Length: 218
Image 1 (cartoon, rainbow, N blue to C red):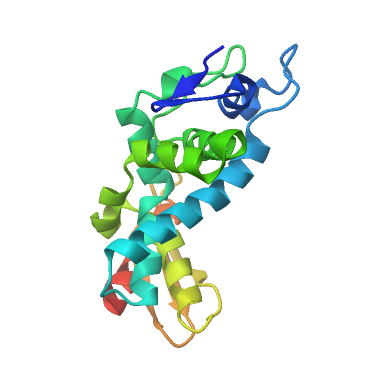
Image 2: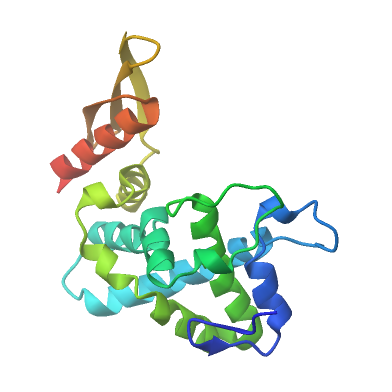
């Protein structure tokens, strides 16, 4: 059983073992719990740590920009990039017969959060901070929007501006063929504006629309 990760040695290695146990292991013999509860805790701890870092580093940024920067740091894309750099995926436990996890899988990002949660339970905020610092997520706050998660960023941006309603996505048009469809989507936020995006899936079109509106707002 692994007892250390990212330079932090666990007093209770079973916490780390649980953090590395993905949901695909739920039905395996001897597996009592996967990492989803730890991911829930780690998500909250990670948000606090990343909030503290952007608040301390970015003295001249207002609330909306701080929110966007923080969301870039802890996005699925950012966490998966850190996981790849740290060779984290090789440590994860997956169910028998499951295919290898893609490097940008949300399961990988969830497990990174679960490790933060496990460290917090094991040694408090000091331990969680040690793991967080090893992840080195701050550089992601300065990445281009295209490398982050535009839909999540837009949602945070809207919430940061007087608690505006969540972004609304509307399918405007579907064209192309069944094998190569094209979707056109519009996103709008009350009081902030709207933008359109086109993609070969609804998700891609929504992401491009969100990115377009973010660029307008900035």
